[in-house]
Image 1 (tube, rainbow, N blue to C red):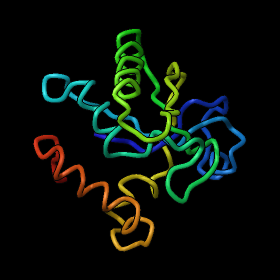
Image 2: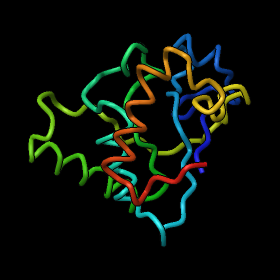
Image 3: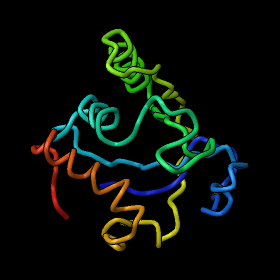
Length: 153
């Protein structure tokens, strides 16, 4: 399960409007709740780095710009921290991207779910220009590159 929201900042229970102005320190993020017997943390990292976004863009993703769009992994324990750092180091060593990876690996401080209208946004607005040009291609890439991990709602 994935929940849209915000993490990594100082504001308690921030709203989308507060986060989107870039002043709360939060990043737009997704809380992923998963069964480790079905998908590993490393598989989630692989999807994150190869499908979900561009880890070389500093404070932006596609058309969205600002620190609230930074590439970040929020770890909950030392095992997740070490796995994320090792994954980034391996991608860097293999020169998987033409530019340096700027993804930060940050301690989890809390997660705040976004307002209901942001949840399952792609399902609710499949024809919006943002979805068509930014997110739908990522979903197709996921289906092609990780068919065993893709599950239709």
